[in-house]
Image (cartoon, rainbow, N blue to C red):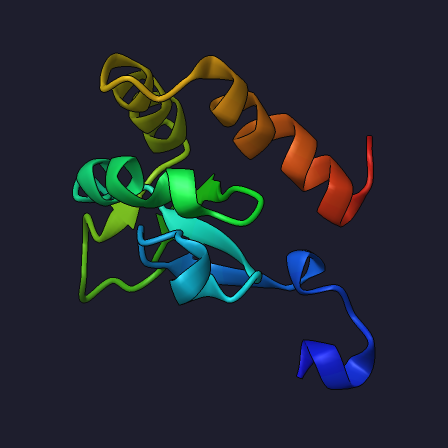
Length: 108
């Protein structure tokens, strides 16, 4: 779709993306990975083969039948610290949280 519309794949964001971020899987589309606890290992295994990085996101489900089914805003900093502790370089996380969003959405 992006190719037909003339949109750079990097500017197309797949929200709630799985933590697999290698180019063979994303095909150049920007993955916005749900920052759940299971994301750490897969991100560590695939980020080096990413075309341009990934973003992290949270989830809020406003469903009274599913209380607690939420990844709140504090989850992203928590996962970021865990990724740093696991050996992901600070530069990659800076791209994740600053450079890539600025390229896609524009600088504030």
